[in-house]
Image (tube, rainbow, N blue to C red):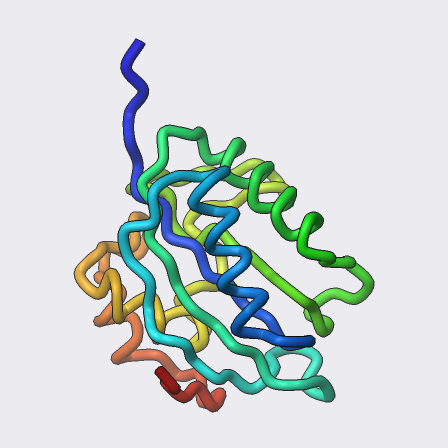
Length: 165
């Protein structure tokens, strides 16, 4: 049986410990548990969003070719977060690692609070759009019908997001 391959775009973030090593470890696990990584953005230093009295984040976007369903991708990314020590103590709080599914092919998935694709707030967040535009600028948001670069260009978010490498 041939399984359809999808490109899933993930956003990885860390603001505790050795942030770069944590993201590199997560990428290694994603390559084993989700699929072949085909694109990785630069690292971006990002001011904390939501709960602001915490260390800044290091963020990257990654493109992954996968034969897994969106729910399997979610299950495996949650498993990776857990393996790497993620504790969900506070909404938008500090964390060792955070892996969000931003896009899954051109699919639109609404499964209550568990899974919403495209990520419901991606178009409002510079820390998502800046790294994503670097690797997927021409990819079109399946609901908004605009590409990622265009969404970034009209974004009103003034959060400090700096490309560092």
